[in-house]
Length: 533
Image (cartoon, rainbow, N blue to C red; front, side, top):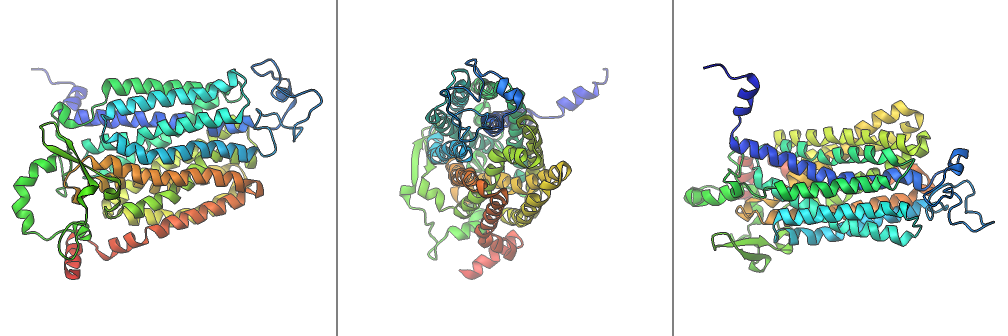
């Protein structure tokens, strides 16, 4: 028998479960990357919605045949700034507040919808729910771009389009995290989800490049093309997404568990076998935190909603208040509020900042801003690797937040010195700002959503994820809004605001960091908690 080619031997070295798990990893990566791809165009187009006229711009006709500067302007009437050559109503002197209102409309709707999305999502099939969200998001993204072709200059139209898009995009995050949590156990979760969470940066980079292709010539396509991509990925989701490994009789956890972690359906199968051994073993610190002095778990029965399972048995879905009682949910939610404030301020305002400081056009500024997302890819992976190695999620986030604040101060100072300094600081700032944000929204959310107190209840994962990301989205809504209000007084003040937010994020984690550092290992943590009781 002839020896198999090396490539075939490599392919056959993986099991059926591993291939399916790699497929779900890649598919969910691409699905959520497309969501971020559709969010990026607004930041790229800002420089085109409000720009300074040149002789070429004044002669360039808009879709109605008039120049952008003269469209819909009565004879003899001048704009507030006669050199403006933007798209009404964003060509006025208060353009920063108007553009900030667009960001706030999207992110405020996203934050409000996120709290409801997780609760709804855990009660509906993930595949249908996510498909609906992606098709709707594609339509809303394209709707904004249609304003260019139909020559719409009403602020209300663009605000409504942003609100609708913000609401339907909330279907994405709880769905993909819950799906990925079903397929992967706790082992190496930080590394796996750190690499997986790079979809945020990949989507931002692709969104910048796609939107940049038409931003200077036909900015309506900068929204319509990403909208079509999201809708197409929604069809792919409907055709190929597998919600749970049990649907195709695969194992729900990784084949190797160096620390013996289990979650999901595997934990249900093993509970009866290990029940007697657990009775004779001291509880770990996470479980001890949930116990009152009389040994009862302080989660009221009203916090749990029971749904019929596949086999007729009840499957519990945790309530909103019940999820809040899981140790660490409130602290990490508040931390993410400030961390996401910083991250989304960069997401929506970085291209305009580069245009103002380095005097680049909208396309070049958009391309340069992708370096921040490149740094974010490495930052997310680095945070996952460190947290896996140290087994300290809060301490890892705290360290990166501690370094991020002075880095932002240096960025605001050296970015005015030239393009080379801007490039270096974009990479470093992206890594330190995105690292904690990526770790909390992925590995930390999945850890808390499969917390030991839940006894393998996978239905809680979507709710916990929605609570954490929904609270973070409040900060995401405030950041760009504050940037729009503060930037007229100087970009330095915007960076001071971002540094203050990073400091607040660090303060929110101090209690968890102290607990991690005072309990160096699981065994030591058990003994310390037993002594307290």
